[in-house]
Image (tube, rainbow, N blue to C red; front, side, top):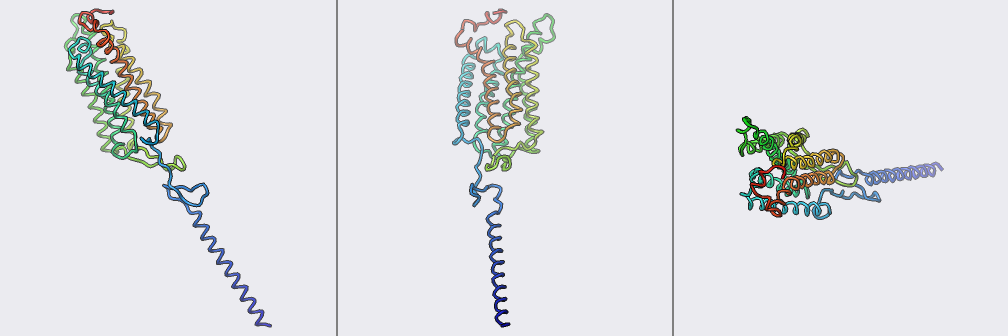
Length: 330
C-alpha cells in the first residue's frame, strides 16, 4: 500500500516538473517573439517579424517634386545663359556699358550657378554633397548679393559725383565695384572655410522622428557656422536694400536703383518667409523649402535686374543709344 502511494507521488512530481518545463519553454518562446527590432527595422502589422524601415529623402526616381525642381532649374539656367549670351554679344552698347558690364556678367554667372546648384540638394545625401550644398549655396549667393551691393554703391556715388567739386568723383570707376565684389565674397569664403574646418556638415540618419521611416538628411554640423553664412548673406542684402531704397527716386538716368530695390525686396521676402518654414519641417520637405527659396530668389534677381535691359536691347534698340541714356526722365 505504501509502495503504491509512493509511486503515485513520484508520478505527480514528474507531471509537475514537466508542466514547469513547458511553461519555461513557452516563456522563452514568448520572449523571443517579443524581442525589440533593431533601429533600422520595425515590426510588421502582425507583430511577428521585423522589416526594414522605408528610406526618406528627395529622390530623383520616386518624388515628383524632384522632377518639378529639375525642370525649373534647367529652364532658369537656360534663360540665364541666354541673358548672358545677349550681354556678351552687345558688350559695347550703351545699355550694357551703363550698367557696369563686368559686374553684370559676374552676377549673371552666379545666378546661373545658383540655378544649377539645385542638383546638389536632390538625390540621396552623402557627406560630400552635404558639405558642398550649403557652402556653395552660401558663396554663390554672397557673390550675387555682393554684385548687387556694388551696383548700388556705384549708383549712389555716380549721383553724388555729379555735383560741382564733389570729392566722390575719384571713386567713380570699375575698380571700386570690383573691390566690393571681391572683398564681400571673400568674407563669406572665409566663414565657410572656418565652418568646414571646425565642424562640417555630414550625412545623418534620423530614425526617431517618424515611425517606420529613416530620414536621410544633412546635419549642418556647426549650427553657428550655418547661421553665420545665412546671417552674413542677410546683412549684405539688407545693406544693399537700404542703399537702393534711399536713392530709388533719382532721375531715370540712375533708375538702376529701382530695379535693385525690387530685386532685394523679393530676395528678403523669400528668405524671411523661408526661415520659419525651414525650421518647422523635416527630411525631404525641409530640403524642398530651401530649394524653393533658391529658385525664387534667383528668378527675382534675373527678372527684376536684367529683364528690363533685355527688352531695351532686343525690342527697343532705338533706346539703346548714348543720347537717349543721357537724357533724364526718358
